[in-house]
Amino acid sequence: MNYVLHYAPDNASLVVRLVLEELRPPYRTALVDRSVSAQSGAAYKRLNPVGRIPALETPEGPMFETAAICLFLADRHRERVQLSPDPCDPARAPFLSWLFFLSNTVHAEMRSLFYPSLIAGPDPEHQDTASQQIRTSLTAHFDLLDSRYSSADMTICDLYLAVLLRWPALYPVAADRSWFDLARWPNLHALARRIEIRESAQAAIRAEGLGPTPFSNPHPATPPEGSAL
Ligand SMILES: N[C@@H](CCC(=O)N[C@@H](CS)C(=O)NCC(=O)O)C(=O)O
Image 1 (cartoon, rainbow, N blue to C red):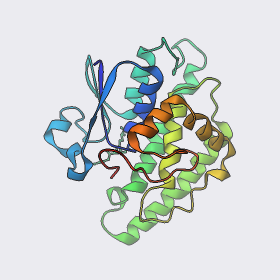
Image 2: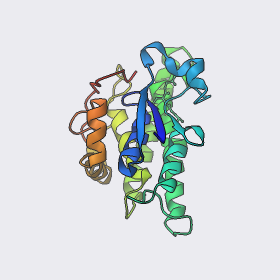
Image 3: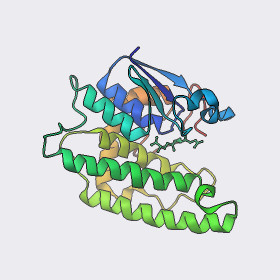
Image 4: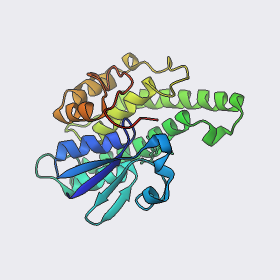
């Protein structure tokens, strides 16, 4: 096997799984058991020193960070489908801008929304205030993406964005999620529909128990192995 994707169902590893399923290099998966916080253990940290999911074992050694892994794979495997514009292609500059925006800003904001104690500490009131600020910021960023983001050909950004449209409808499990209504963003809704009917998404749906409309109308994952949280 060229690659081993260390994953947990419905985690950021889902983005990498979609990319692998589009590009189709030989790969296998290895479950990271979140029920025992395996991502924080010494063995996993040898793959990802930050202790977060995903990690990808490659012939050149382990990689971490979702965007870095996806860009590496897209640049490396271009035979079946091109998921990243060539370095000299004029489309490369906007592609990189949106990829880093998704990773550094939107994904990072979502992480703070899902784990509010990381930025607000243990006080529930502080966490509520921080979560409200993040929801406001994420709403503005989805407005921006809906109005400005476009890619003529599908890239890793589309796959990444589809997953980022899934999570706020489902997480945090115990919080009010009514702020997120995909119907408000017709272009993003259309992107979610485009991605979820692809073969790559069907493979991910089967492997991670994501239900028939994982991006346009998500339901909690019922995975055959492991757990999302
Ligand atoms: N910046 C990282 C974020 C990854 C991330 O937040 N992963 C989550 C799952 S979606 C995780 O590992 N959570 C468990 C933890 O932080 O202990 C990336 O893009 O790979």
